[in-house]
Length: 145
Image 1: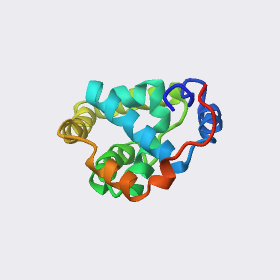
Image 2: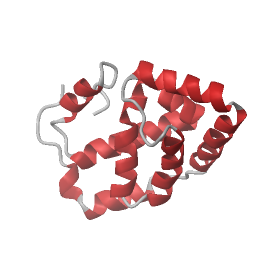
Image 3: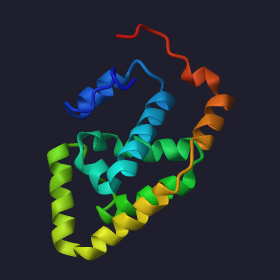
Image 4: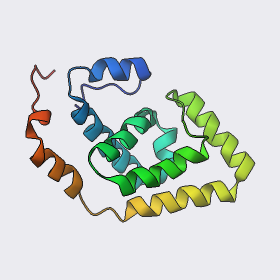
């Protein structure tokens, strides 16, 4: 999935290249990208980078997999953006700049709190439990490129 789903050419391309996978597979990938990016550089990095295009799938995935604490944590960041974040990288970057200029330290404190919550994540227990309970949703039918 990492090589087959394209996040660097806009939201339509992301959705189009995701079509061959189940929604649960797409959510799992979004969560995996979310944790990888936030763990390396926080929510700021996640949203700044092209991979931030998966922000909505990450929240939906957390809810779908019963990871409500993680959904709530990320939702606090999204709420700070007014309840939605652009899927376009340039627009997301501009949103980050505006919030940084307008709220300064307060903005970084919100991000820092959300980051700290993710830094404490110890594994994939929730995701694995969901997969074990619904293995049929994680079977890939098709050809790998």
